[in-house]
Length: 176
Image 1 (cartoon, rainbow, N blue to C red):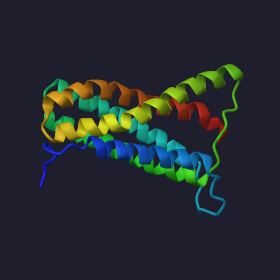
Image 2 (cartoon, one colour):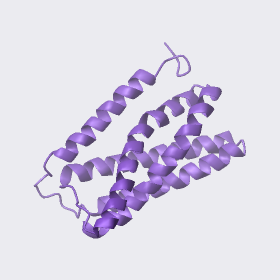
Image 3 (cartoon, rainbow, N blue to C red):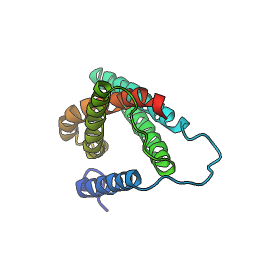
């Protein structure tokens, strides 16, 4: 049986990315769930922002740790970043399933700023999925040279995505 180091995970990672993006895109175009859910769903975007904040913080700590050559701490906080990103993904999908899209209600100029940030956030979030997973598999497989090379691209993108997730929430939250 192939180990993490020997197996080529890239095709599986790209299939996973395509399926994930397809599910999220489908949820955007489907009508929101009309039944009673038993709680105020507008708390979910706030949880998303909190999870993004955690992810951003965990990534900064992981970056600090690896710069100090503390690999154990680096791994711990990378796993924490994946964990908070996973929690974000779950609450994001649930919210998209349960609601209609929220429209930005600010001025035209601020709407344009919001849309630029949102578009860059979404585009780079899609790009980040395979990058983060490939970086993870290289790290777990102890393929350090490949891991470092892709992590130098992945880390700034993931930091941008997690920080702009919070900004997007702050800009759209008055309109929920």
